Amino acid sequence: MSLTQADKTDAIINAFYDVYNELGYGFIENVYQNALYRELLRRDIPCVAHPKINVYYKDEVVGYYEADIIVYNSVILELKAVTRLSKEHELQLVNYLKATDIEVGLLLNFGPKPEISRKVFSHYYRERLQNNSESASSALSVSKK
Image 1 (cartoon, rainbow, N blue to C red):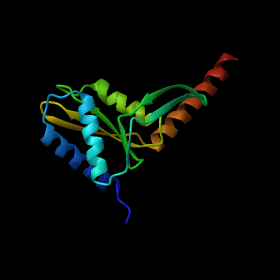
Image 2: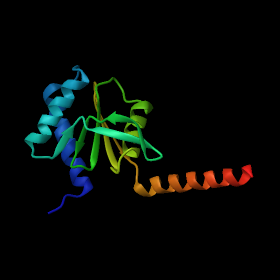
Image 3: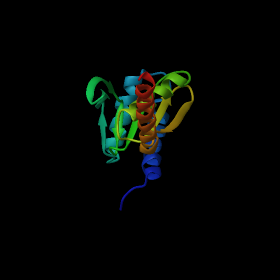
């Protein structure tokens, strides 16, 4: 039986809360990353820690990101251990999604209060951005003539 995206994110969030309840607040981010990674493996949830995500510009690699954890090969996890999540943290996760074919990301904060933010960047939206960019480029080339 195949898991739905909701089932996958529920399993991840349950593991997150178990780690948070066990360790509490106050450790550095890396401690939580290692603990959550081990908890996911303990639950037989397929995951990869610190995968390199290439960023392309016109089919050339121009840099890379290192995500915290990719789960089920379909959910990117970005972990934080901060007092409060910020817009910059959310944008970081959205950029990870933009650079991959993965559409769902979870921003998990091991702060004074546990926080979860779910982000979706659909292929449909990506295609619209590319089409708009191509339209803008052709409009610019027409207007330059």
